[in-house]
Amino acid sequence: MTGPRALLALLLFLLGFAASAQEPLRIGSKRFTEAYILAEVLAQTARPHASVELKPGLGNTAIVYAALRAGSIDLYPEYVGTIDQEILKNAQPSASLAAMNAQLKPLGLGVAVPLGFNNGYALAMKAETARRLGIATLSDLSRHPSLRLGLSNEFIGRADGWRGLAQRYGMAQQPSGLDHGLAYDAVTAGQIDVIDIYTTDAKITHLGLTVLADDAGYFPRYDALLLYRLDVPQRFPAAWAALQRLGGSINEKTMIALNAKAELQGQGFEAIAREHLAGGASDTVQAAGFWAKLFGPDLARLTGQHLTLVLASVALAVLIGVPLAIAVAPHAGPRALVLGASGLLQTIPSLALLAVLISWVDRIGALPALLALTLYALLPIMRNTCVGLAEVPQGLRLAGTALGFTTLQRLRLIELPLALPTLVAGVRTATSIAVGTATIAAFIGAGGYGERIVTGLALNDKDLLLAGALPSAALALLFEALFGLAARRMRRS
Image (cartoon, rainbow, N blue to C red; front, side, top):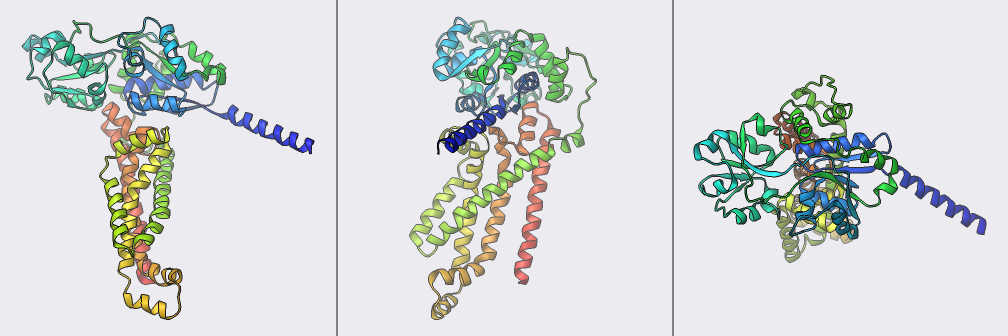
C-alpha cells in the first residue's frame, strides 16, 4: 500500500507544481489613461518571461488595492503619495522607500521599481479665466468662493484630496463630482471653472489650462512605482528581474508624451507601450476609426465574457427564484416578504452593490459581478412565477386533486405548464436587465462590453463608448427575438 500511496502523493505534488507553474502574473491598473499605459508597459516587459494576465481599468485606489490584498492581482502601478495617505494613512510622508516597505511588510506587500517621474495632483482652470480674475495660486482661488469646481469623485473622497485641501486653504466652494475623463471638456466648455488634474495629463498644455501653484505645499510627491505582493519575486523571478530594469526609464516629459498619444492621437494602449519599449521609434500607428473599434480583435473575447455573465446569472436566478416562488406562492405573508426583499435589492445602485459584494467575497472579477446580476434577476423571475401560479384556475386544481394527484404531481402536470408562459416572460425581463447591467462588470475586472465603455470614459472617447454600447444593445435585441420566437411557439402548442 505504501507504493500506491507514495505514487499518488507524488502525482498530486506534480499536479500542484504544474498548476502553480502555469499561474499567470496578474497585473492590474486604475481607470485613467496613464494607468492603462503603464499596465501595458509592465505586461509587455514581463510577458517574454512569464504568462501574464492583464486586468486594466479596475477602478479607483480602494478597488485596485483590495484586489491586490485579496490576491486577484499581483502588482499594479501606484504613487508614493497615494500609498502614504490612502493606504498607510500616514500623517507625514514616509522618509524613504525602506520606511514604506517596513510598514507594508506586515500586509504582505512591498514597493519597488521607481519609474522615474512624479505625477501629482493639482487644480487647473482656463488660462483666460485665471488671468481675468488674477488667480495663479490655490490661495488666490480660495478668495473666489463663487467659482464652480468639478472634481473627480475619488479626489473628493481621498484623505489627501478635497477635504484636506479646503481646510488648508480655507476654501468655501462646494465641488461637484465629475468623471476625470469628462472634466476637460466641461472646463473648456465653461460648464465648470476649476478641475483637478494629474500633472502628467496631456490635455493641460493642449487646452491651454493654467495649473494653480500649491503655494502652501499641501500635496505630497506622487512618484510612480510598483506596489506588489511580496511573493512575486519568488514566483516570477525572471519577470521580476525584467520589471526591475524599468526603474528610472520614464521621466515626466516622456509620460506626458505617452498620454498624449492616447488622449490626443487616439492610439491604443498596447501600441503606445510597444513603441515606447522599442525605444520610441514610431511605427506610424494610426488612430483606429469607429468601425475598427467596433469590430476590433477584442470583440469575440468581450462577447464571450458578456454572454457568460448574462447566461450564468439568469440560470442561477431561475434555479434559486423559481423554487422559492413556488414555495411562497400559496402563502400571502411569506410571498409579500420575499418579493419585497427582492424588490428592495433592485433599488440598490449597481456600483454600491458591487462594492458590498467585493468586500463580502474578498475579491474582484467575475464572482461579485455574477452575484450582483443574479440578485437583480431574481425579482422579475419570482414575481412572474407567483403571478403565473396565481392565474391557474381553481377548478383545474380541484380536478387534479379529484384525480388523485399529489401536490407535487398537480404542480408538475397542471400548474407549472399553465404558468410557464408568464414565468418565461419573467426570465425574458431578467435577461434584458442582465444584458444592460453586465456592462458594470468591467468596473471590477470581469470584462464584457463594459470594458470598452470604461476605457471610453477614461479617454473621453465617444467612438469607443459606442463600440461598447452598441454590441450590448444588439445582444439585448437578439435575446428579445429569441424569447419572442419561444413565446410564439408556446402559444401554438
